[in-house]
Image (cartoon, rainbow, N blue to C red; front, side, top):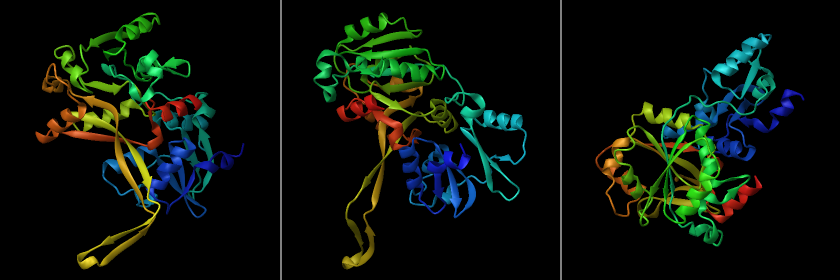
Length: 352
C-alpha cells in the first residue's frame, strides 16, 4: 500500500488547534499525527508533545504548530534500512518519516513493518508495588454486582482485576496489594485458582474505609514509591512515562487525569462593567481534567492516613496541598481512559 494512503487518516493542518489534534488522535485511535501546511510536511506531533504542553498549561485552543518539536529525528532519503531501524528502536517510534533534502515527505516506515510487532516495550521497566482498591460495592454495575464483586466482572477473556495485573506486569510489576471488603472471600478464592505469576497480598477492611482509608493498613509494609489504582479503571498509557514525570518533578503524589471535553451548544457572552459586551463566542468547548483514579504515591504518605476511619484519596491530596507538598497531574486523552465501573463504559469495553 502506498504510504500516503496509510497516513491519510493521520494528517492534520498546522492551523488546527491542539484540542482538535487530540480529538483526532482519539477518534483514529493513534498517538501520532502528520502536520502539514498546505501540501508541505512540517513535522509530526505525538501524544507526548501534547501531554507536555498541557503540563505547561498551554491553551488547547492554540495552533498545533506552536508546540511542534523542531528537533524531531527523521530518516533521510536513501538512508540505509538498518540505520532507520536503529533510529526507530532507540526512539521507540511507532513510525519513521523519511524526508528528502527539501524536507518533503517521501516515505514512512511503520514499526510493525520493520519489527513485526505492533506493541512496543515501555520506556523503561520498573518493579514497584501496586495497590488495587477493590473493596467497594460496585453499585453502578448493579444488578451484576449482586452476584459478582466488581473486580471479577469479565472484560473480554479476563476479569477487571486480571486486566489491571497484566497491564502493570507488562511494565515489570509483580507485587500487588488488593484492598478487599465486599465479597472478599470470592475474590480470594477466584484468584487463588488462577495460578497467576504474581505476589498477591490482601488488605482486609472490616468496614468500608473510603478510597484511601485502607492504605493505613500498609504502614511499615511498603517503603518505596507505589502505584494506587481503582479496580475499574484502565488507561492506555505507558506507566513508565507517568513514573518518569513523577520522579523528575519530585512529586509526593501524581494524579493521572483524563481530559474531558464538553461542547456548549449556544453562543456564550462575556461582559464587563455596566454589562458592556467584551466577547461573543459561538458554541465554545470547555475542557476539564478528570481524576481517573490512578495515582503514584511516595511511601511516607501512608503515615499521613488516619487509622480506622473513612478517608478518601481526595482528602489526602488536599492535606498534602495545604502543607504545600508537591502534587503533579499527568494528563491522558479522553479516550485513553476507561471507567469500566459504569454500565455505559463497561458495555463499550465489551464491544471494543
